[in-house]
Length: 166
Image (tube, helix red, strand yellow):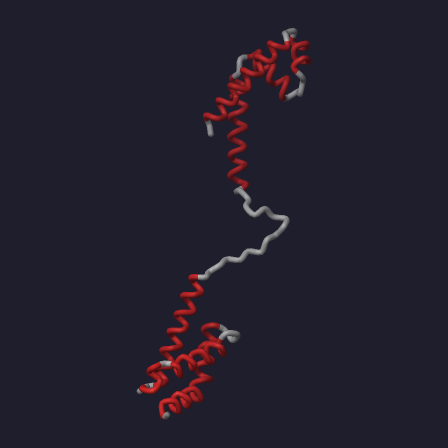
């Protein structure tokens, strides 16, 4: 029974010091619970009846519990981010997209300039002035089939050039 009294005496004398120590380490909310757990482990230990230095034993249990707690905390590390309904969950970098768009626009304009003149004129009338194939054929004095041919040729060339730069 003297070991239990010794442990009880250690509890009474070291409780305040241990509580302050744990409060600094883990915060005031969890410190009282850990103090109780430290002494419960000490009392339940097989070594409790053979302690030469119960204060050192309590301190060792405390350090071990802090280490275990840190390991658990590290293993269970979860990052919580509040969701904002107005923001997208993933947003691509805007600067990179702007640079890519500028490059693509530069490639597009160069490719359009490189088209044969009649094909370029048909393409620009269709895309820039939003004319139908019939309107383009009437304006240029060619058949609708000729307009379709030039549009197909322009689109195929532009697709090839743009794809080559990706």
